[in-house]
Length: 66
Image 1 (cartoon, helix red, strand yellow):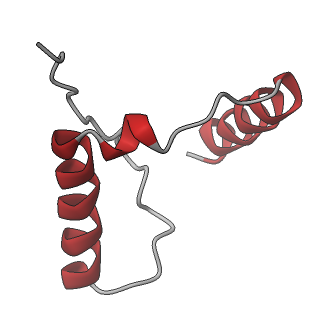
Image 2 (cartoon, helix red, strand yellow; image 1 turned 45 degrees about the vertical axis):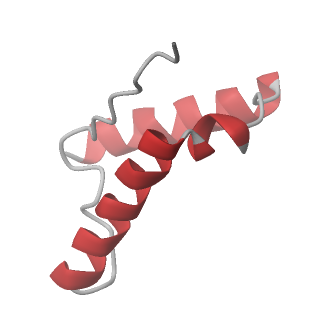
């Protein structure tokens, strides 16, 4: 039995989204659907240490702006 993946979005993660509310709703629905079908895991790749550090830096900067 495959473990069900729960998709949770951090508060404010779409603050910089530049589409309509309808487009955002569609994006969220598609991400959740991909998780249910197992596609997120199938198509994922492990981040390099450099990529991980860059994401952490970006999140840190974002936290200071809020």
